[in-house]
Length: 298
Image 1 (cartoon, rainbow, N blue to C red):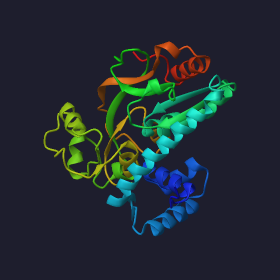
Image 2 (image 1 turned 90 degrees about the horizontal axis):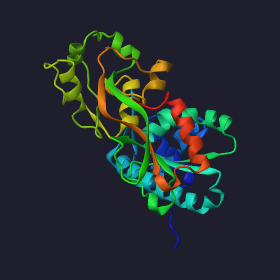
Image 3 (image 1 turned 120 degrees about the vertical axis):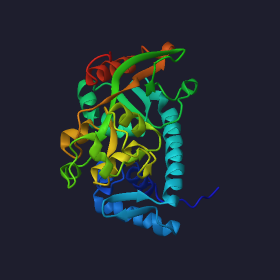
Image 4 (image 1 turned 90 degrees about the vertical axis):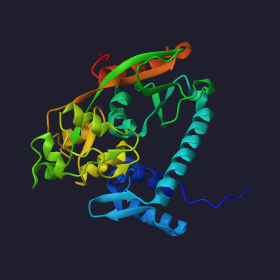
């Protein structure tokens, strides 16, 4: 059956830009120039007959149509990636396919992958970026990085790292005016919300003993990549999560204005079916991830 579809390069450019809320970051991820990414997305918008992004002074924001299309494109590329992994299983003795959240992949794992290749040149990692529950019975996914309590029957669960939540914003925003010196100063700032974690601002403000700041005020974004990109572009203050903001803090794109941190109840785990958890490439991945995370989480 003939299907009139946009070019794959344009779909990949759109997915990356929608995840990262930045043409520049999408270009770096796809090894293209920002102008090439912008051109591909503009062509996609012309073909679709509608805008997919609001291009604003402080950065990008998905339109309603863009938000719906991103979900569909992301799911379709996920399915294509999983199908490709099934076809490639002939070289499975060298390869480990791992499922993980898009934000964790982009902000923590991908910047470290060259180190894995240097240390373990005989093995390959294939990433499946998804928020969906992993179906290990299909045999497509070998392991996953997930957040929770580690109580998953039939799986080997290795703790990787804890998570702390704390406000982050751009350096210009923290300097003001008005400057952010104490949590009560958030009353003059825009709070950025992650729709995947409703109520987290209420929880943090309660822990900081700040009752006069309206926790529900401010725009809501779909996921961590969006809300952190908005914060880096000076739109307001977001709640950052370790390890997702480590690279932004190190590079100075984001700063932590206060010293109050709230520790999450769960933690990140490497999970894999107990029956296949000792495959050589999975052993290599486990050892490397524990080393990168600083050893087993306590």
